[in-house]
Image (cartoon, rainbow, N blue to C red; front, side, top):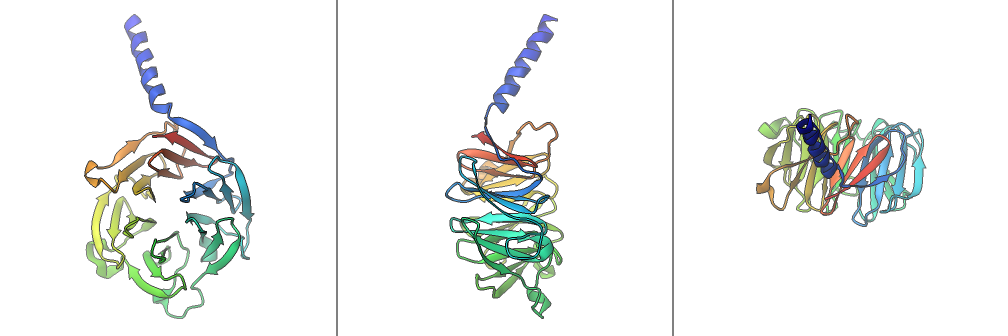
Length: 277
């Protein structure tokens, strides 16, 4: 009996040590679908239930909310992804078949859509994700055609990535995209992460071990998250391999995670959990 109690006590100590890294609980959302953090530390969140986008301060204080269901500027119909730079915020407005672009204070700037273009090679529909490289190129994950399209910031088509001619780098069911500081493109395709250069040439295939993972890259750290698991890879030292992180959520679904040099942010439907590293 005494031995059993000691084992339970030791297990409790281990569990507390693993979960004691929780620093902060941020936000109060209805059904958050995605988030991003820009270089200045501001946090941007999409809520798919309310069709709203929030801007939070680095301390987690809500600074602005925009949106609501609709088709006009700053309204959304299922915002499924968000990408934030120091100056701009890009929201993937899926059912409106567009990318809405805002400044860092969520003031509307423009909307990017290809629905009026005649050539199907340059069009996307039901986008799943979008990112912007540090060279200013816009990449859109075309949910209707299972591919990634690259445009310049004027909206001019540049190239298609992952089409049937790409061999082992052809995309079957891409779910999410991320871009590194070196402008390499990471695409989650099933449980495989396919890596491309800026010209669309395949570079590597990484086995994530996760089903339909979500991707982020911050501080040159690639984070891969599924509903229940989180892995991350330091792109500056890839030989070290993937590391696992367990936020101890007891079945609560993970929507997305971001690992930085100093913290781990985990988005669940109603809040963001911030852990120390």
